[in-house]
Structure formats: structure tokens, C-alpha cells
Image: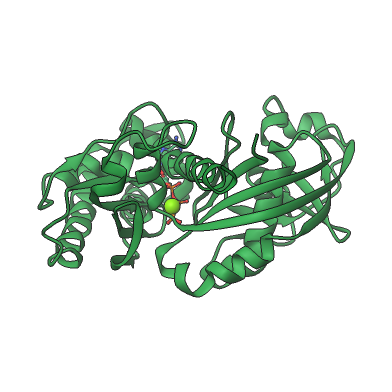
Length: 343
Ligand SMILES: Nc1ncnc2c1ncn2[C@@H]1O[C@H](COP(=O)(O)OP(=O)(O)OP(=O)(O)O)[C@@H](O)[C@H]1O
Ligand SMILES: [Mg+2]
């Protein structure tokens, strides 16, 4: 038996996590907690699911959607500079407060970093997380649990690699086929703010062929939002456009706006930019066996990107929200790594 493995993918848009059974996904936002006097009415029906609140060194934090709605003072979305410092620890402890059911445990963590941060921060992040974490988990009904979690080992992976691990490793962390050891696979990870490119060569990360750009899906959403503002005079937050774009229209003050033409145009433009970068960064890697497209933005852009790529695209399994493939892969990689080591 190996210890509990928790996998965490901290993106600019969403934090994703799994313990191998359940998945957790919330906006990468946190803020100082305020007193909730009327918990039930404030939080409503989904309060249990969405309630993530912790206290670290006597400072209370709301994490995820709760922070967005309730933190009056400071509520920040991840920015690049804060990313590694305080943010990732708070978001990670937020995850642990939800996924761990014992107050005292020893666990192992697999965490992903954006390509652009990987080399510079992988050791810093691992050191910060590999520690004894004492914090308080505040539940939705106001009761608390003192958590005493020892993180005994940490692996840090470049984010997009998770999707390859997910594809090539079984649910118990055993390579499914020889391809794990032989193939060279390019991955395009379209996130909220960034798109990451990397290559998994024989199951290993290759720094050559890696790139981060600002061509995240939010770029297309910003265009759609601007067009919508022209038409309606209302600023709709980028975050709130996902569902509207998905359904093809949005209702503002009782009036319905058709989003299909502008969406089609914005997605096509972004997909072209993303595919062009791929063809450029992998120009010398003609020996790539296949390419995978992942990330929440990949879910919507894949059909547009695919057409413009030079190479064979492996479709990713449709059994899971696209945003979660990386983190499921990290979990499998954790099993693969620590099983091998202990055997
Ligand atoms: N069910 C969903 N709900 C909300 N957004 C979704 C959903 N499915 C796909 N998306 C898209 O996924 C995007 C976020 O993708 P993802 O979680 O991969 O980004 P991220 O990893 O947080 O960002 P980055 O990689 O830039 O750090 C959203 O902006 C949205 O366009
Ligand atoms: Mg991401």
C-alpha cells in the first residue's frame, strides 16, 4: 500500500485536484474571509460543495467561488508574480481541506506548473509544499477541524504532461502500452490565460519544443465580450461567458443576443494563432509521433486547431471535463512513481 496521493493542477483560471476517486474544481481565486452571519441564506443550495474556507496562522481565507462572492477586502485571481509565493500554498491547502477526510495524515503530492514557470520554480514549490502543514478547515456549517498534514514527498510536473500520463498510464499507474516508453508526443494545452506547448519524449519532458504564449481562451472571450458591449452596453465578465458561448446566445436585460457568428470568428482567429505557434516551435521535431490537444480551452478549440496542424492528432477521451485530464494524469504519475520506488 502506498500513502494517499493527491494531485493538484493550479491554473490561472481554475484549480483542479483529485485523490483518484473524486475531482475538485474551483476558480483560482482567494481572499480574506469575512464573518458569515447567515450562512445558509448566503450560501444557498450548493453551499457544501462550494464552501472552501481555511485558516492559516490565524488568517482566515475563502477559496474559489466563495472568495469571489464574499471576500470584501482583497480577492485576487492568480497573477504571475503571486503565483508561486502565497497563492499556490493557499489554493493547495484549500484543496486538502476538501479532499482529505482525516485530520492527521501523511500524504504525497503531484503538482503541475505552467511551462513558463517550470524550470525556475519547481524546486521552490516542492520545498514549500514538502512540509508539515498545520491549518484549520472551516466547514460550511461553521464547525472546524484542525488539520495536521505531513506532505512527505512532492513531484512537480510541467502542466501539459499530465494529459500524456493520463493517456498512457492505467488507473493504477502502470504503463498501458509500449508507447509510453517509445513515443514522442507533442501536447498543446489551451488554458484560460495561456497556451502551453511541450513534448513528452519516451515518457520524459523535453525542454526543447516547450513554449508558453498568452493565447489562452480568454483572448477569444475578450473579443466576444467587447462585441457584446458594443451591442448591449453591458460589460459581461469573461468568466461568465463560457455558458453563453456554449449555448450560442445570452440574454441581457431581457434581450437575447446571438453569439454564434462572433464566437466562430474569434475561435477561428485564436485557433490559427495557436496552430501557427505549434508548427513553428516544433518545426524541427518532424519525428513527433502524434499531437494531443488539452485544457479547458482545448475542449472548444480542438476542432479548429486540428485542421491547421502539421501532424497526426490523437483525440483525447471524452469521458471527462477537458480541464481535468492533466490532473488525472498527475495522479496516475504519482502512483507510477511511488509504486516503482517502493517495489
Ligand atoms: N464546464 C466548464 N466550465 C467552465 N469553463 C469551462 C468548462 N469547460 C471548459 N471550459 C473552458 O476552460 C477554460 C479554462 O481551462 P483550464 O482549466 O484548462 O485553464 P487553466 O489551466 O486554469 O488556465 P491556464 O492554463 O492559462 O493556467 C475556461 O476559460 C473555459 O473556456
Ligand atoms: Mg492549465
